[in-house]
Image 1: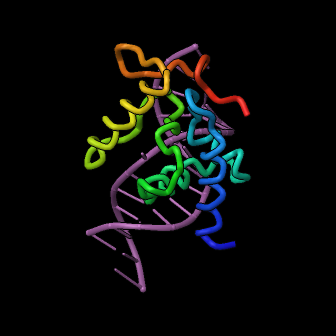
Image 2: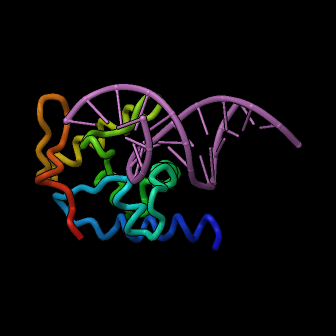
Image 3: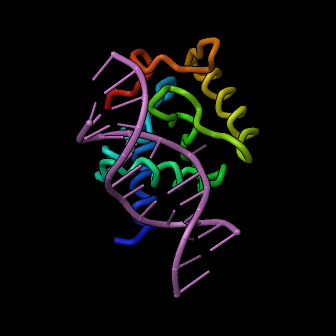
Length: 105
DNA sequence: AAGTTGACTATTT
DNA sequence: AAAATAGCCAACT
C-alpha cells in the first residue's frame, strides 16, 4: 500500500461527488477507508493538477467553507466560482449550508 | 537528518 | 453547548 494508492483512492471518492453537492475532507477520508485522515485528503488535493479530472472544488472543510489560504488563495477564488456555477449557494460569509449541500453517499 | 507545516477532524474537557 | 487538546502523515525546510 503506497501513498500513491491512497491518493488514488481519495481521487476515486472525490470523483463520486455529484455536481451541485459538496463533501468535507473528513467525509472523503472516511469513505476512502481512512477515517480521521482528513489532512491527507487535503494534501492529495493540493498535489492534484487541473487536468486530472477530479472535482477537487467540491471538497470543503467541515465548517462549510473553502479552506484555501495564503498562496492558494487565487485558486480558492476559482473554487468558489465553480461551486456557484454548479448551483451551490454560499451565504454572505462564504459559507456553504452543509445541511443542504452535503453529499450523502 | 531532524523538525516544522499544512486544502483537517474527532475526541475530550 | 462551546472550547481546548490530541492525532494524523506526507511534503517542505
